[in-house]
Image 1 (cartoon, one colour):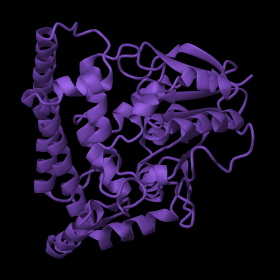
Image 2: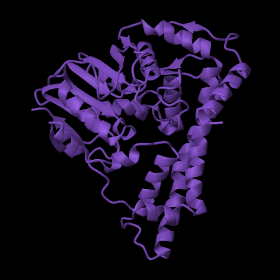
Image 3: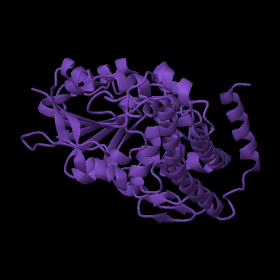
Image 4: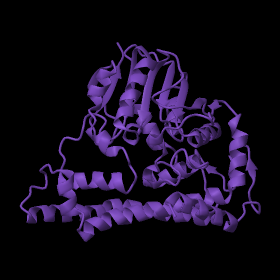
Length: 389
């Protein structure tokens, strides 16, 4: 039995066994919120579910600190035992041969992955187990404002977009509740520091603007659950904000979240490399953690599409890991980490992206590229900034 079939059967069995919301659910003006909201966060409907997620978030944070540090120390010791400088570059195959068999290093990957799988299982159980309620909530929000939503149920979905990135069941396009699952699941990713979309607000504050200061229209490519697009509206309140994503369930949730927040943002299901907007329509085009989740060749197409979409003097500001240049120093530990994230966390395209010279690709697309644009990604002093002549 393949994994997708197993997940479908599991979701069906959980749906039959899940407790009903009917005993206590109440329809609020902003949608289904039986336990209310804290600012932008609509609380999960069950206290035990919320506490379970809090535990898994704390567990993940601990693993990424204590267990990963122990693995780093073990990697250094192993390298020194073999007479290798821990800071020296090493081919991925050699790094795997040396580090993968070690139990401490393997533990660092296994504990992280298993915690993430438990988190996803909680989300699948909740949203599939109470599907009727959540579908009704989305249907009620679809036509609501202040922003708009455009879904394209018959749109062609390329194979590259069908992977279960981050091991998310069904990925971004194959699960009706992909937006719900991603939104609540990534609270775990952000170690509990993004319940009010504050991380997205921080990134939005870093987005560069054209030299002439004119920002009338802004587009986010690969918008996911819409938190960045909402933050961009808060950053540029007078601007018309658009956001697109290949995942219909993602933009559907994004629109609902924007409605709940009272944010006038327009969401559309569309490919980042092929949007329906006219040439030169936007002052600013940006993206957040898009490029490492698409093939390198598609990234190049996205750069070309961004160049088509911005007006003369307009800018493209891509925020992502390795966004300034390809990885420089490929240490053994770094190569092992890159591999297991690619292989086990289903970051299918991250190795391709790590090898892509994004600055050169943006220049090939027609941009004048400043490799020392305002820093956005943590740990990076600069961010790529493309300007259209």
